[in-house]
Amino acid sequence: MTDTLFLTSEELAGLADPAEYVDAVREGYRQQGPAEPRTKLVNDEPMGMLTSYIAILPETGAMGGYTYAAGFGDADVHFMTPLFDANSGEPLAMLDGASMNPFKTGATGAVGVDALAREDATTLSIIGSGAQARGQLRATMTVRDFETVNVYSPTKEHRESFASEMNKQFDASVGAVASSAAAVEGADVVITATNASDPVFDGDLLDPGTHVTAMGQYDPGKRELDTTTIERSVYVPDLRARATSDAGAFLQAVEEGAVTEDHIHGDLGEVLAGDVPGRQSDEEITVFDSGGTGIETVAAAHMLYHKAKAQNLGETIDVAPGSEALTGR
Image 1 (cartoon, rainbow, N blue to C red):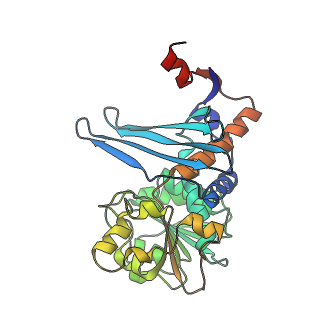
Image 2: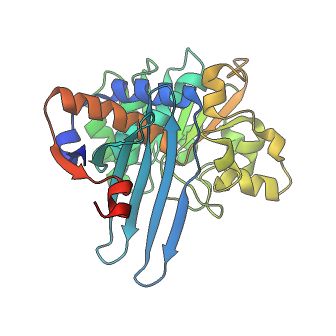
């Protein structure tokens, strides 16, 4: 038997701050270990989706992934994160991934901003006002000194509530705006964190030098960014393989003949490792397109695992090795 730590969402909540998530995720992507795009199974009745993705972080010495069920009978989502030792193969932990989800996703967006946005960026705009938008803002505020944050979502009450809540948390001035056009115009950084199926702003409105991080879609038939945005940009996905499998904005731009697969500048790991350059001028429009990979999940889970062990959190469970099961010993 192997002692394996089980950690609840409640135990993980508040265990690390946004900057710690950002550091862990940045290091995870820099390593460029093996990673696979998500696998998604869709069920019709009851309506639901089972999704999984995996990654190995060779320098960290950790591997694992994310499996979650969304919809089905309870119309909710449940995240499970197995974490293994990448040297021995033994299980280290099983994490309930609910509380860490917006933090590790937000950290990924922040790493993209840090790698590709102008150093002097001071105006941030967010399209979306849910949990993921909150995670994006909290993490992104750790990588740039933003003075102004504008938020837009279609429901007035939601965007105003978001602005009021976040205005109390940061020194920057956080305000709601009445349209996505108002959010995008004049922004140094634009983050989209929505469940929209169609583009949420007009790419012609982007000023030269703007950075865009798109976090909300991972479906070939859905996109937050229009073809103009993709065509105008230095395009960086979280993972090359994901860009050609479920990055709807990129795939639809290819289908429309605006770009080819050669438009992929490099993925985030290649930029962080210095294999390809990031931003090369203040005039470039850059895009970081992230639908999620196992890399940020394993990186965040490994960081949380060590912090939990240091605080004696979690419950130890026994996991039998396969040899024991196969031999019946």
